[in-house]
Amino acid sequence: MKILNFGSLNVDHVYRLDHLVRPGETLQSGSYTQGCGGKGLNQSVALALAGAPVYHAGLLGRGAEFLRTKLSDCGVDCSYLRRADLPAGHAIIQVDNAGQNAIVLFPGSNHALTPELIGRVLDHFGPGDVLLLQNETNLVPELIAQGARRGMDVAFNAAPMGPEVLSYPLEQVHWLFVNETEGAALTGLSDPEAIADALCSKYPKLAVILTLGELGSVYQTGSLRLSFPARQVRAADTTAAGDTFTGYFLAALADGADPAYAMSLATAASALCVTRPGAADAIPTLEEVVRFL
Image 1 (cartoon, rainbow, N blue to C red):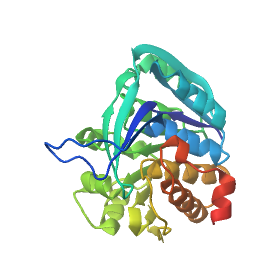
Image 2: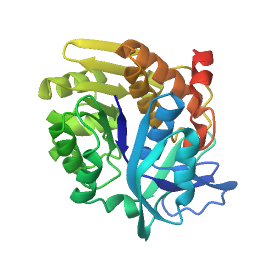
Image 3: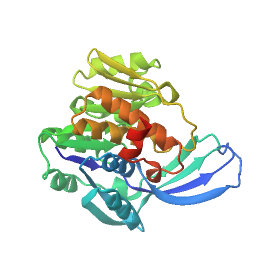
């Protein structure tokens, strides 16, 4: 099994503040850092640090070559990563003293994918391989359809959530990763169990992974529901928690683990991640996660 992440890559501009900026307010930042991010890049780093064989495909904009270096240093295969003479995707991230964040995202080169590029890359993958996607690139429906047509198992993280996701061919998705807000937007429901039930009823072949922050997480497929409490830690930065969860969950499944162990491992990994500042740089290694477990 090979895992292909056709995902976003962003330069993160991170500002530490006493509280998140309110409308009309100007705040002085206590610190500024530039780092590696993007949900795609973060998830590839998490997969690689968890020991999974992962390939990252996407478009790297101007001035962002250090993102390729980060991926390679973590063990990600970048054979399908291409340069684009376009502004790189980037994010303006506010982080407050409680570790909560607010993010402004500029897609840049992440929204310059073409059907031709997608086809050329996916020609190297087939049945039994995993295609991981997020909603930070363009042509997500094309990616889902092409991956499913080749017999790949498609994993989709519906973030950042937008109304366009409602029209995506989710019936062709194998694993759907959503948080409570994203699940509510997809179903019109607020109760976590009702969200999972509604998604599994509408898409019978789907496995739903619903993350609930401090309330833990839920795995559901058909009538099988597994609930997991969150690990209690002191949060420093929650930016890459969901991406860490996604990467570690898929890595465990790729290694032959059952969903229960995959959820347990992902829960521990994301808990460790939030204790550290940054996005990709905060993702723990498998050794650290196993020791934490």
